[in-house]
Image: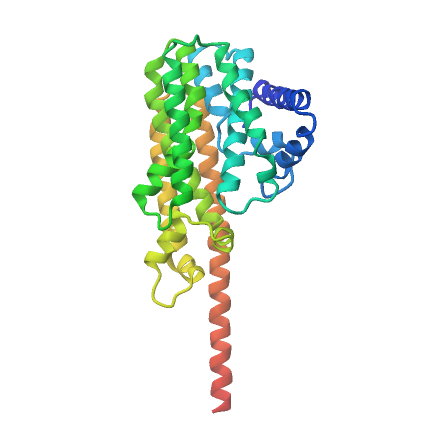
Length: 319
């Protein structure tokens, strides 16, 4: 999904991040680098994680926006955006891992927040003067992201309205590089439609994680909209797994397909063929995962029926 030039820029930005850490904080740098490799569910290099087709497209969206406004994106400007966004992501991820109560090495790495925040903000000073209209937007979006992190950690039973409000704001930091592209290209009027897309995509992306990771979330006692809905919808005495098989998975897929349809309608107005193609691919990937899960459910149902019939046959023989 990554243009070769953008892929090169991501690699260059990561190298810049590691080089900066090694120079500024040589004791901390290898520990932070190890955490970056281990921060996901599998030990992979950061570049592979950020470019994964199911990752949130925080590096792709500003590239697609500038591609829609200029003959070609400015590589130097885009590297600054990618470098900033990577630092912002790591800043948020480190705090989030501590706040969710399941951190391991993260408390000992909290001083790295100084590096990440500096790396997040500094690149924008090369493009925008202190009095530029970009900076109030930077602050309001960044503070909204922090507020959403606190609200998410404080949530117990999550309903639809709370989910939409928090899920949309948890990923809202990507609006900052989008705003930077809009201002640099002289099109601040495009912020609103692209931001609307980000809000809806944030809901879709979070629901995707909640739906397919519900068992892991339940084991880690992670509060999610999907598990909250399980608590509201399942029958008395019914297990969460039973509800998921009976109707929960179908309910979650309905939400995902609804948001995907909305995303595709929004993308059609944004003038980005690459974004439209991306959504088509994500929808195809979702349908493939849906079919895999539903095939598993059908196999389990067939096995349950076979065991039930075998039990009846055994009972009949005994009688």
